[in-house]
Length: 417
Image (cartoon, rainbow, N blue to C red; front, side, top):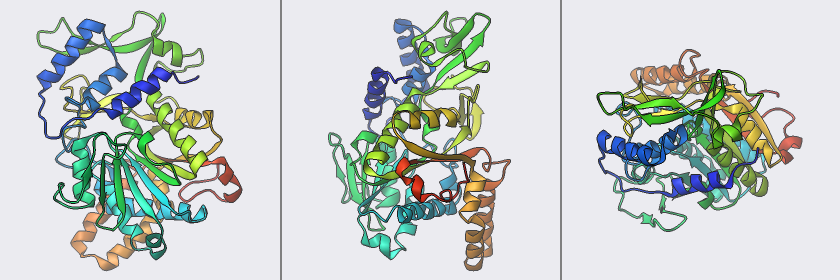
């Protein structure tokens, strides 16, 4: 179905919003603003709720500080082991070689967290002379000024006021040079990234995009909404069902929709179509790593706080909200307007094993102190163990269809379709 232009506009308006880092907003302040909106406009869709509590310029969860790692609410693969970023760098180099080593080349990461993945990748790139000779630049798509500063410190220098050019009104809101010698630019939205051959990396990016949530009832599909629980003695939010069809249910629910629960993110469609248009027009590849399934994921909307599952409607603005990625929907949206090739999803353990994670471990064992190696090995086991992150996370890649003639065998990390 065609994407409504209003959804596109709303997404771009949302990701353009900015706030000053370090601001402190209480749970009560966030709840009051949500309550006031609900009282004026009625119950919110889950997508509206997610936008408000995750990327609101006033109180968004991602907008005010560091939420990653042991001291935050969740840990990502790059934070667990440097080998993860090193292998993704090798994967990027392999794709660059297979595509004829175009020069210049852009590495574009969407939602770069602390900058750990980019830092590990740049360290690998800097060890290859042919890469250092080309015009390679790093572009980070990041809406949060607080996280931009954390990334700047990670990649460039500890003093964020040093040798960095800040410009909130420019498509490039921040520019600097990394410690590895590569230029890096920050953008608050994808469309501001310069056109050109690009390798796009989206690691745990799509799972945080707002979703619409639906539930099948005896009278048909209803949209799940967020309302104020007026029956509660304390100020609380609750889920309610729409009384009938909503604009989202009309757009996304059909007679063929299976299951009792269905989640869909129009924003996922917007972003993947912009990415595929770019790689078809300018050359490049998209690599996505996230948790999800190849089809309807069911009821997966949830929250994390202090590395534990948490009520998604409790403590809004102070918890991470997420939902599984529907890779089937992602593939359909990728192929809808452009001619592209897709590979995956494949489990993370298989992708990393195909890239040689065991070989890298053996190399480190010969070089590392035994205590340090034990930590590295433990991290790699967490990434590949089927009962931890090995099967939960998936890799998915998108190429221009013109590359089909060069892929007699699948790209690194993937299997025959």
